[in-house]
Length: 120
Length: 111
Image 1 (tube, helix red, strand yellow):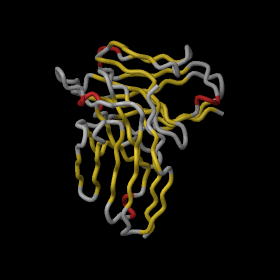
Image 2 (cartoon, chains in turn yellow, orange; image 1 turned 90 degrees about the horizontal axis):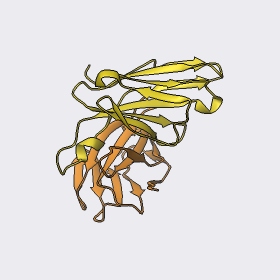
Image 3 (cartoon, chains in turn orange, cyan; image 1 turned 30 degrees about the horizontal axis):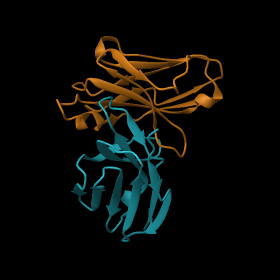
Image 4 (cartoon, helix red, strand yellow; image 1 turned 120 degrees about the vertical axis):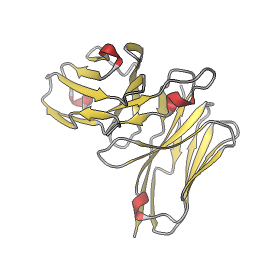
């Protein structure tokens, strides 16, 4: 299977605990994105990496959230001191690099199955 | 702030009927994607359109990008129960790769 994988698929945690999610992108893709999706809504952008560099973070990403992509391969998203409002599906996506003057490949993002977080 | 509005939000039809889902914005996008998502799974990319006026067909699905690249539509002919799911449009601009998603259209096709 050469698609995007995420682990775990489901996580139930108590308020105040820390959680960490992992994403393995498609191997030849150099861009990796994190999104959050709540029930009945489309995904919302959180952050993205080009190789190992984190290039943009959404204002949705509070100080309790941190993401890394060491060596430009897999990525982790950590949430510290979880709150009930953090309950959501966390989605990871990857895309190939754009071409000079042609950015369309950046937006052909392939998503993983997501991690469903429930904070009780 | 770029926003994408999808309509309708919910659609329940009988097998064999045709339907159209709309995705509208006041902003120009350099590309627009359509995804289909099933409960508990991630979105699956159906198509990317990049040129104003572009039309792409994928079996019974027809996708169109507006001339001004601000809107798009998805038309399904002779819908089948297997088409049931959440349809999402997503627009991109610039070179960040950040996608702006609509809120989705939930389609239910009854046998």
